[in-house]
Image 1 (cartoon, one colour):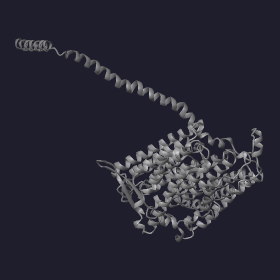
Image 2: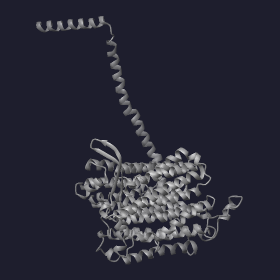
Image 3: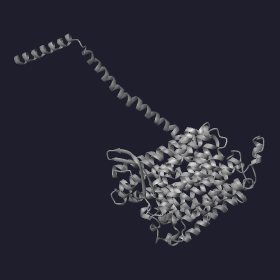
Image 4: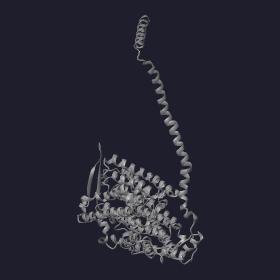
Length: 636
């Protein structure tokens, strides 16, 4: 199966090409069925490769398939090559697996959309790009997928581009990600200049062998971190992700759960040896930014009223947890939380889409309530996702979040405290969302009457194509934590699987107070999660306390508006000044020199008349001048 790794990205690419050529003929639901089958087929190939790798010893779980020589330019030799190892296959498993469920869900969600086939065209291209990103054997192949998912995110976020808000959100995502792309390009330049290769194996081997200077390794790590901040929506580049909610809900699930936003975490994990060869403060920077992003986004989520905006800021916050783990040296914990987050966040986003579909495109939670009776499957599965992200045992999110906090405690107590507060807020705002949407009084009838709506606007359950993925993801959100249980080394299945790629795991904290007392920290994590749930119930379900939702939190601390004001005011003026300087001074100097040269050459051109008598006259005149010069010189 390892020789068939190329099929993993090839199948979604084939789906993209077929829909591109025959999309109008396939129509609805043909285009959706084709796209879903292609992604599901890719998933089956990944499963086959996984079992092939699993049957081998740890040392043999590394296979490169070279398709062709891409850039044979002097010392720059880059192959179009794919790498199958435990990390890339772990990523590919949930990218294709959850991606297939999202494709199936989209068949029902996008029913009746006039651009039905085009939507699946973009979905298949997105999955292909993401697979190239995670399977790339070198930084340049990864960068090809990196740019591909950036372009596809623009197409998908602004899919309903006739709405100004969607068009603006797509442009914001595209421009913000370009800042991160700059960081990754600089990292590639530094790596090639220092090591002479862009291959992960070559760069990591140089870092592990001490052939990469600490200052160079730190430069590469920090530039990769800039790229990761763009793709994985960390401060200060997170602003594109909440606005990405303007796209169709399956896009939100695809981008924010299983694919694009995990790119930065994957890249830093892939380059873990470089991070270890860096100065110690590099890890502290990554962990600090992650912790602050997690807390910042969680405070905003507590005051949002749009059902998808709550989940968007939750995604930013959970990604912050992953970066906290990366900066703390807990790469297994980061990947563990990434996988469990893919399960429950995809479930929550698709569940929110089911609510929006059943509520006739209403997204304001203040106009919902008591939906669990009318949408039982959606309500039941959404509640499972809530328990998972809130950190309630034995659901998947509890185990992965606790492992991140365990490493954070061992590495930096202050950052651990920030993580604990964030976990408390997570349980609080997710409980708030569940109460507002599925419990309490039904408020949708009142608002329908206020808006003068006619006809039956009673919420309804979604079709099977939409609820089937919810049930599967709910099951994964329950049992997903079993891949990395803290009971003993024998239950650390994910750690053993990733060991050939990530050599640094719990060995870095064994013997510390945190490791010796992990059960106490685990009990504290349970107490924190339960406290958040109870507090939200007391406020929103029981009405025992006044609801406090400061406007500044609803406005996201006004960070986004401040950035817009700076970019649209002084920023626009500065860019205009640069453009004027370029046009008047730089281009003026170039054009001025060209005009002078042209004028001088015009004078010389007039002397080249082509008449022999003119040339003879000039030669005779020159001879007379020379003769006069010698005569006068002799006399003087």
